Amino acid sequence: MKLVAAACLVFAASLFGQQPATAAPPAMFGQVTGRVICGDTDQPGRFASVQLIAEKPEKMGLGDLGAMGKNPDFEKAVSVVFGTLLKGSDLSGLTGIDGTFTMDKVPPGVYYVVAQLPGYQSPLSQFSQVERMKADDATVKAVESVAEKIVVQANQPAHVELRLERGATLSGSVRYDDGSPAPGVTPILMAQQKDGKWKDIAVALLPVVTDDRGHFRFFGLPPGKYAVKAALPTTQASAGLGAGSLAMHMNMGDALVVYSGGVVREKDVKPVEVAAGDEVDGIEVEFPISGLHSVAGSVVATSDNHAVNKGAVTLLDSETKTSVRAAMLDRDGNFRLNYVPDGQYILHVSGAADTEKSGAGEVESDFARMMNSKIVKSYGDAEQPLMLKGDATALVLQVPDVAAKTAPAE
Image (cartoon, rainbow, N blue to C red):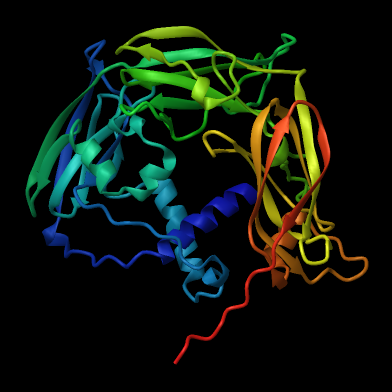
């Protein structure tokens, strides 16, 4: 329940960040009706989700999360959130058993109609969840090139026929190199772009999670080139007995990422190409057991070598400068990254600072301390190259004092 409440709070914050829309008079609305057909069976697309995407969608920005609860309309906003989640909006609907849908009270305007049904291609399958939320000009332009376009006028019905084509599937398993399966892992689907770069995409609203045998299956894919990556399941939710028994365990410093094809670096990934309707099995993502190392140490101030107690250490690939792993400093200025393969890296320190320490006997999580502690002194960023062929557990990274700001000359 805590996770659901947190998600709803974030959604409520997004409502506070929006400009209130001016509702059109009832007589100024139009109606949209339609039907969804599955192209491979010529049967109705039963209980498919249908959305109208405005030609110029409203941007959603997160408001001040800290002040959100103080807003006098907070309870009303949360009520609106739950109402929207449970009932949908005037711009979305669900087809019936005959594949038809009706949307009433649609404001006049230009829309792109998108239907989603598991196993079938959708114009939204090419985007990540972040891109869907942003709905910027680039994403809308990509949708308009493949989606049906309609114009809704006041007091006028608009009708649209949608035909869904079955997408390709990629399936396989995530396991350890000793043969044991890796259940509860969230594999991420990657699509190779025209420029050769990889992008994470979300073909479904809910993430795919490996079953008890480590198996996964992505479906409804448009033609393209794909790969799969996965991280060790170092973030886990657990529930026991009692109202307060839900717990989240998180250690991002241990989240080794591996890719399909037995590689541990994105630059070495080889794509799997699929055409419409293809079914490709045997995609293997394998976590190595041996050949992994620990990287640990402390962060100190260059001026007097005292340990700083706030900041983040990021392990970067020395060639691509992409982040491989990250960890927060503990209250004693220490960090630790486990399960790191051989290679050349750069250790990057950012946000280093001295903070007021908690009183004697006070216990708080490192995350809470990082978020709530008062900064006494800040330090500059620092980098240190690292050639890793074994454990490196006594590293000392020095951060410089931040230069004092000088008043502008008159």
